[in-house]
Amino acid sequence: MADDSETDPAVDHDSAADVGHDLEDERTTAPMSDYSTRDVGVGFAIMVVGLLIAFGIPLVAF
View (cartoon, rainbow, N blue to C red):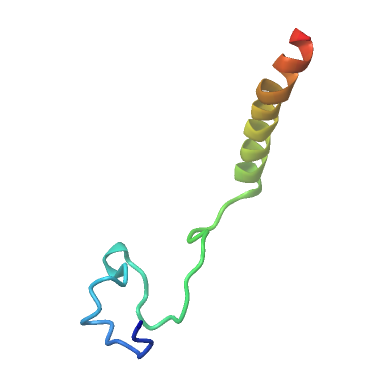
């Protein structure tokens, strides 16, 4: 049976603390850094190209 008791973060070696997480925070979520509107635009453009490759080529082939 799993032990649900609190562990000391200094002793808990499986806490992913070696990647820079603040041990005092209860929870951290992604994205860990800020992103700009330009970054969103680039991501959207990459998504559109991916959709064109994934769906456009098969539709044109038939």
